[in-house]
Image 1 (spheres, rainbow, N blue to C red):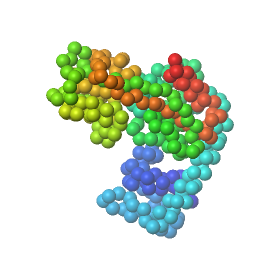
Image 2 (tube, rainbow, N blue to C red):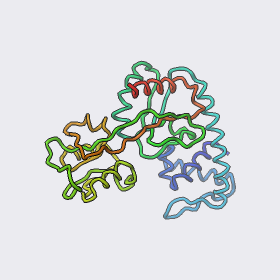
Image 3 (tube, rainbow, N blue to C red):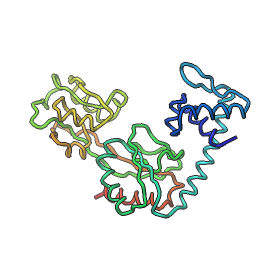
Image 4 (cartoon, helix red, strand yellow):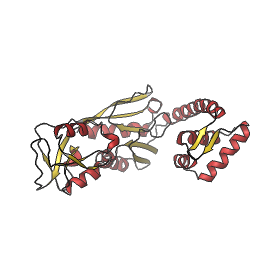
Length: 283
């Protein structure tokens, strides 16, 4: 069997569709379908049931999946082991973080880094989902929860304070239980985040006027005078048209953690990027 076909099989199993798998792998949908059929001919079994709800593993497909994941694990370990021996400051580093942290905190640091090391390419991916370090979806990940994976080298990168903001010159009241006040907050999928819970508890009678998983979108709506928003202080303090307000207590801040797979601990360009980032964050 071709290892490339196995990788396509894994992508389809994880995405549940050819279109989703094509986006994961960067290949075209017809190519994905053709190579999947080749694999099924080689193993002599249908690996998926095709239906209106997408691709569902057959019994044989589920058996192939467990073996394929072990093959992938070994292949990726081999890849990481070789990459970890590269001490040259050249090549690609893929970094994952939240949107606002990547745009407002990491990008200025990375700009200085690539000026110092022009042979290194930094690829920054801002996404709400957690990228896998073991599968090398990213080489370096910044996130607001500690890593639970055993093979991850991690440390707390920084602590971020949060504040309540409104549009400059706004007459939005900042006392009472929030009656008549509009709120700008995270969308429904992130309502259990500490800042969202704090804001609803602090102003229980306020209504939610706008929700988004984008902190930049929240800041723009706040600056437009739509309502109060809890934002990371590095974003809110620098955003034009916003002013911080005091509701009697500060919203909860968040720690930011950085991690990479232990197999990459000797990768020169990765260590150099980690060092300058932590140095700047501590300044």
